[in-house]
Length: 512
Image (cartoon, rainbow, N blue to C red; front, top):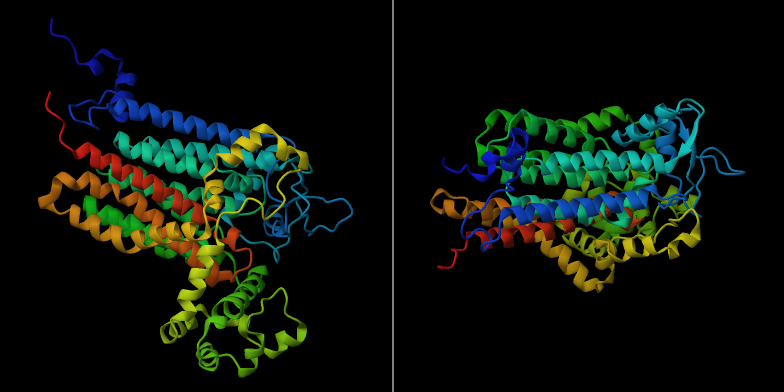
């Protein structure tokens, strides 16, 4: 009897798994004669390491996280989950360090509530414990870990090659295994969802480019859901969700000629920001937040770089008296200074465009300064409930092996160069190269062209994270507001690995 192929000797379920993940894939010359099985096993190892790092950081009690600098109240006011600080009011900061204990008392305040998709995490955990129950911030953190792991598995289970799967797994490890990211999980900052769903969405879009067969409605639904979740986290992420949704639509059409799903994704991307702003009308705290952010953008970041301040004020529709406030921000302005520059908080961001065109320095100089200031920070806020835990070997190892730590060790010029390379490559270079290599007459190079999707998206995330931070909130807490730069750099670096391996895989094998 003729011997069965290796996969035919397996049971149905095992054979399906092997075919799907290409564990049995082997052909002469593949990855210089390295089997896809080895790369897939390496992917499994990378994900196990990532999950272990997440569990160690978020499962440790007393907790590690970020201290509350007052922003927790926006989520607490929506879901009725509050931290009670000894001797303090209900809405209060606690910058000395994170506190694990929270209570679900059900008290809500519509004015202070920012309706965010991230609110679903504390809401779900609170309802598991019940009304008036005390539980830990680490319980909310572990819920975020569980969702992140499930989403990672969903992305990596797509029918893609071993090279693409490994590269996406590396991007996940760089982000989800980083202490600067995990510290957001054990908090009531909504930024955790922004980081989670940005990297998941980028990874999922990259799988659409790397797939062996056309994606169906399941993948479409996964991307659309991630776009909606990301776009309803907070104002900063709404345009990013729109951009990534449109990028996904372009890839659906360009690679698979799927007009229906492409148009549907484009519609989801465009409508998602409108959904967020419809949920958060101008009558609540968001009106005040928007005013503060615009004041810092205009006075602290943009106007100090104006070559003609008088013209700049006219283009922004501000009175000449605002000139004395240039360089200030909303946190250090006196009452008299606020009165001297009425309406600065209500300037539309659309008015910045004519100013950028008339005086380009007001765009490029703040952007360049922001790139240098946006190095990932794990030390800006206190992050141990028990300060002595900083000396524990597990946290020292996690800290020393995090991408954010490595990026902070770079000289400022080297770090800025890396971000600029990622940004320029993602926005300008990689789209041109990918389109060129994807032409029909160069079909042999299509795997390399498709591998460009991951670093391309990473570069776009880098560009958006920096620009949205400095032109969305000035230089205030820039490292926190530009936290997604880490996601962009991680995807860009992992994408370079994918391109290198895809190129190696296209080289002819040596003759025996």
